[in-house]
Amino acid sequence: MDCPVCTVPMIVVEHGGIELDYCIECKGIWFDAGELSLLLEKLDVQGELPDVASLPKAESGEKARRCPRCPKYMDKVHLGMEPRVLVDRCPSGHGLWFDAGELGRVVEQYAVGLKPGEDRVIRFLGEVFVAKGGEG
Image 1 (cartoon, helix red, strand yellow):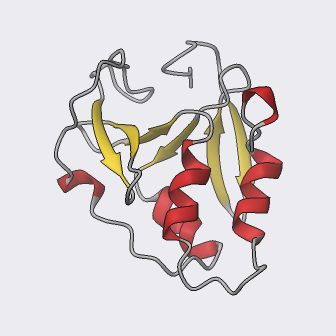
Image 2: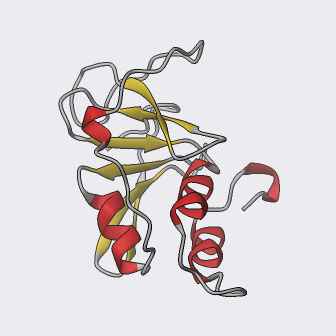
């Protein structure tokens, strides 16, 4: 599968039985439908993810990107709480695209219920998905 940003082939990264498509060039991540909820569950994140399919389209000056699963242009939607994160959603329901660093910000917002110092979710994301310039 090719990256919707760089158009280079992505690699598959596996964690806890979940296979994610990851671009080694731009550090973006593709989640097939349902994989984000599954990852949050596997990482024992207790926050509730909204129904992404029902989120309204967001206005953005960001360039439209094609879904890596189908030829349709993806919708921009806001995910998370303030500050919300702008992600790309396939209009056919194939999945979600996160640019570098966006996944960590979303997971951090939904990581309610973590005890102080219990940063395994953020640590995992930082180890596997390192953003450009050393950001985690």
